[in-house]
Length: 385
Image (cartoon, rainbow, N blue to C red; front, side, top):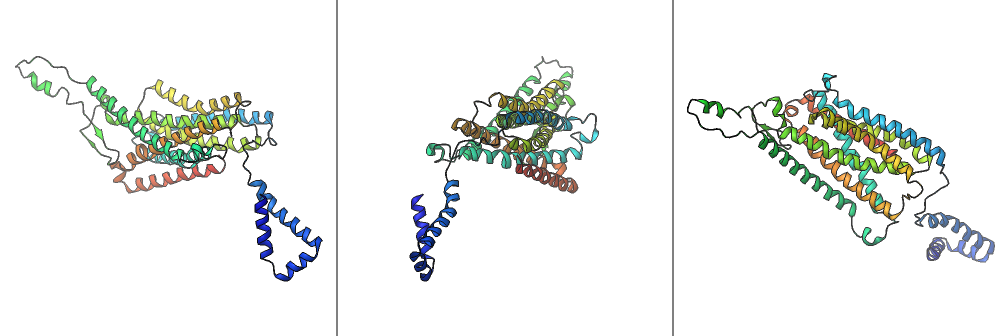
């Protein structure tokens, strides 16, 4: 700091005309005043340049903060439940059925929300945590861990996606494989040839959006299409749950009403939009009532439970501690990789390359507008949360 002061003083005097320098040099009060003014200019930059990992406690109010936390638990729980249940009301509201055009628009909006969550909300938080000056430079400052963890997470999601789909598809077809029967030469062989004909082996390509095979019976919707939707909904919920718990803990551990107040409204909308995305995937998976209720309840409770955990560990939790920064940063980066992969590959690519959308210009335009609207609104929420 002293060296910087001397450099500034030298540059200051070098920039003055010679007659000014002579006047200041001959007059001690002027010399003192000039040096004082220079120090006043430099002092803020010198103070602000210091890195501190200590939390500011002047705005903390534990009792008032607790009121906001309880309000956050109630509002986020209700918003999440409404959001995740809304797309699953197809039996009551015909327009929300997966076969309708409106459902494509809802899914495009939800995919934009999930994509913005990964890029705008979760990934920047991971960068902030894992590049914090409160962490040692070795190894955290010498390698881009955030991008690496997000990349590995996306690749792992692809592998889980592929292996799970393959496993469930094989198990489904093995279960429905026809049993060999003794040959009787009375024409029954023709019937046996067609015995499995009603069972159609369907496979889809997300990047081309086409399917092979004739119409399947309702019970044969357990083909690759249905399996894919079930795997997608479960992996997507995993990615959402991870970062929902983390943001809940962060909010619950804070004791600053000034920090919590804007987060209550922002996270309420955040959870509502995310719920719509997840609910759309669950409705397409055609789960039975019990699994649907469990998945919806699990999603709705994650952030409120995270807030409750945060309240419980308020006295021992320090958000700038190396352990908290590393754990939160790593989980956020992994969550971002999952959400970005799911939004681009399993949601947007599959729907936008679907023949139904490819042959319908109005639906394609509406889906693009919905996508941009969902991504835009979710990005806007980053101003507060």
